[in-house]
Structure formats: structure tokens, C-alpha cells
Image (cartoon, rainbow over the protein chains, first blue to last red):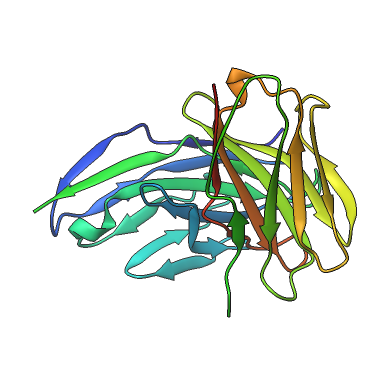
Length: 113
Length: 112
């Protein structure tokens, strides 16, 4: 079946620290992988995506590389800001078993000044 | 370009009532999916509509239903509301339903 396992939170970092949020997946077929971010009281915003192995998605200083050999899609940022405080969701989507997203449980990040 | 619009943003209903939520996707997007988000269960898929046809359905009881109109706008309906239906309901809009999706701000439903 399809599933996503995310690093448990919450995560608290100081401003300008390095961020890694681990994400591994199990999937039928060849999934596309995504990171979404949710700010308090809001819906999900697409942060970045990768559609095939070895693709690197990047946006706003965040990066993630689709690693098929380790079935991983870890999110990284070199220097976090207070405004990055939010909940981050790793997700996959595959056409082989319907088109729905399979989401991880989310990782809450708080960045302190 | 306008984003995904969900209405209303907040709803308070009584057990046993029914409710209808609305979603207007991004112009040109033909796929609309619905998700339920709760603290205990996380994000769960309800159903997906594409060109007015339900293409995929999650594991929810028949009290949860939806439809899509010719302009791609979608509604979901929950009948005989239960306390456990309290959640944030999110609508996702996608061109084909196979790539990235864009989410609305959600409708926060509280059942009392």
C-alpha cells in the first residue's frame, strides 16, 4: 500500500539554524512526492515537489531530493527564519491506486529569534 | 490568478443536522478533491471529482457525499452530523488530478 512516515515533532530551532525534516515513503508504482506547509488557521500551501527519482525540488530556500533507493524525500533548509514556523507535511501521489494524496502526520516547526 | 475558494470559512451545526460546503477551484482545473483534517486522524481523503464524475472515493460512510458542476465547482454534503465530524475540510484543485494540487483555506466545521 501507500504510506508516508514523517519525523515526529515538534521541532524547535533558533533562527538561522539548519533544518532537516525526515520523510520516508512506501508506494505502489512511481509516485510524485510533495512537501506542503500549513500556517495556523490556513489550508495547505505547496512548498515543493519532485516527480521522478533524483529530482530535486526547491522553493524559498527549502530543498528535497527524491531518493528512490532509500525511499526518502527529506526536507532541508540551510538557515531558518521565524516566519518558517508552521506545520510541514510530506505527501505522495500515484496514479496506480487512484489520485489521492497520502500525507504524513505533519511536523510542527517553531523558530525562535 | 485566483486561488481555490472555499465557503463558508466557519460553520457551527447541531448533531443530526446536515451541512453543505462549497469549493471553487482554480480556473481551468478540472479535478477537485476533498480532505478531512483532524488532530487525531490527520489528513484523510474523502473523494475526488473530475469533469463532474466521482473518480475516486475514500473510506468514509455514505453520509458524506459530493458533486461537481459543469463549471468545476464542487460541493460536499454531510448528513446526520455527528460530533466526530468536527474537522477542517479542505478542498484541493488540480489540472488533471495527477500532479500538484492547490488547497483552499478550508471550512472549519464544528458539530455541537
